[in-house]
Each structure stands twice: as structure tokens, then as C-alpha cells.
Image (cartoon, rainbow, N blue to C red):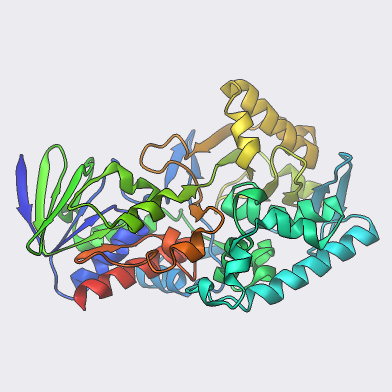
Length: 449
């Protein structure tokens, strides 16, 4: 077995781990990054299929994601705006297709009024929440004791209004049913994005993309520290801490260091044996964080036919297989691309189908929004994160009901010289690339002292 020594060993070459590595290297420390996958990037990934660039993972940039924007500028990467000209599409509970402009889905005047009222209430509540310490709110325990679904039921008897407000957090962000997480978790998700109104505004949260793909960011970060410092195909099996020295072991490599940063989702910690064991409450916390379930689908067409209809490519419906869709045409691509998302129990049901039946159900849903031309793409790709052994779901993890307040002191805490970093434990930028960068920097600073 090969043996190496370094100042800091980092587990995970995603955005958090590579940010930490760059920060520590700039401070003059020696680092080694161990990554189980055969690539860097973690949940940021791109692939080429039949000549088309498919951004499999994280890809969008919001105007308030200051850390990500600053990093893109530093790396010399250019951005471009998502296409959004024209009308949006909504499919109501009766299956009727409605085209609209503005932010609110077209429904009856009474339902629209309820949606606006509930969004206003949630926006005001989210601005009272500190995303770094949501448990400090005076009503935190009460908010964390009820599900988001229960709270919505208390607010209105209008089922369509409830379904559409729930969609913003449940289907679109946490990718879990609204009964599976607390009101506090929903408010924290909104607060991390600047407020509930920012969270529900696709023109804000999905503002820009990187020319050539977001995957360039982790690639350049790895090059910055030196590719010899990044060990791919290195699945860490154990971490031992004795007398202030950390020993990390995989099947073929053993690394000794003074400190360690574990840049993995908390739900993956159980894959590693710790000696001594992590504190029991830290172990319990990881067991109460679970990943969401989402299928990201991209369909490439020879022509952006929806634009010919005066449509933006943006579509929503909690009653469709694809609950949201956008024009996702890459910069410089001559045709058009749609991206759609299938989440929580709907994704569960689709995974019970054959690949052919799953594809047909998804394309039929695209067709419900945009017409029959949507069923005949030239390239079709599904991002399957839940079956990716080193990810196990998307977009990130969230607590079950009561978890945020129960484990408040352990979410970002270090254990001696073991530090943790990933977007799942971020406050600002929670489950986003910006949050991963922030957590990588914070972990590096904790090492430096």
C-alpha cells in the first residue's frame, strides 16, 4: 500500500473540497484531495452525448450568489443569460394548458389570491429566519415540529393553492413530499436564497449559466492546486485519529495528516469507519439527514420550436410528471434544449418503469406543455443521481421533522481536527454551489485557525 504525508487531507473533490484545497494551498499548507469517483466535481458534472453538452448536475447562477460569481470572475469564465422570452405554460388540475405572463400560475381569481397571500406570508416569515442559525428564531421549535404540508393545510382549504406553493419547496428544491420536512426547514431553504419570493422566482434563482459548462469550475480548481495533489478512484474506508495525527486509508493508499476536511454529504459518512467513533449525536444527526429524489431530464431538438410559438420554455404543474421545465439551450448550440425535473414520489414511481416507459412518460409530459414536437428529440438524457453510489440522491440532504432544532449544535461542528464541508450544511447557499464554496472556505479557515 502506498503511503503519503501531508498537512491536510481532504475527502471529496467536489466544490467544497476543492475550494478548501485552494484556500489552504494559498495559505502555504500542503494538501492532498482523495476522491472516490474517477473525476472531480461531485454534483457538478457535464457529459458530451452525440456532440451535445449535457450539464448533468448543478449549472445555474443567481445574482446574489456572490462567492460563485467571484470565483467565476477569478477563473476567467464567462456567463450568459437563460432564455426566458415569451409566455410561460401552466397545466391545471383538469389538464387544461394555460399560457401566462408574470409570476403567478393562472388559476381562478380566488386561487390566485390565495397563492399570492400565502407567498407573502412565507416571504415575511423567511426574512425573520437567519439561514445560518434558523433554530434561534423564537418560534423555531414550533416551526420544526410540524410538516410544511400541515402548515399549508392550516392556511387554506384551496387545494390548488396548496399544491402550487408546496411545489416551490418540495418538488423544486428539497425534492421530497411536503409532509416529509418541517415548516422550519422550508423557511430555512427560502432564507438561504434571500427570501421566499426570491426562491419562487425562476428569473432570479435560475438567472445565468457558464459558457462551456459549470464543470469547468472544479476542473480549474483542481488544476490550480496541481493534479498530482488529487487522487481519483480513491474510496476512503477508514479514518483514524491518534495523538493529533489523522490516518486516512483506502484500499491502495494511506495518508497521514495533521487535519482532515470531510467534504461529503452527511448521509455518506456511514460509509467510513471512524476510530475513535464520531460522537454519538454526530452519528445520529447524519442518520436524520436524507437526500432528495429527482430526475433531471434534458431533451435536445434540431429547433427550439417552443420559441416559434412565443413560449419561453418555462413550464410548471404539480399535476404533471415533469413538474417544471425550462429552455436549457447551451451557449452556441444551433438547436434548442428543454430541461425538466421529476421529483419525490413521482420519481419513485418512474423508477419502477422500464427505461423506455419512463422516457415516454417524461416526453409526453413535455408534450403536454409544448406540443407534439416535444416527443421527438434528437438527444435525450436522464441524470440518475440516486443510483450514483457516491451521491445517492439530489439536490442535497435535508432533515426530517424536528431535526434542525434537535441537532443545531452539531450541523457544522468540528470533532477535534476533523472538519466538515458541503453545501448540505450551508446556511447561505444551502444545497447550491455557492453554499459549497462558502463551506469549503469556512472549513479551511477552521484548519488554519
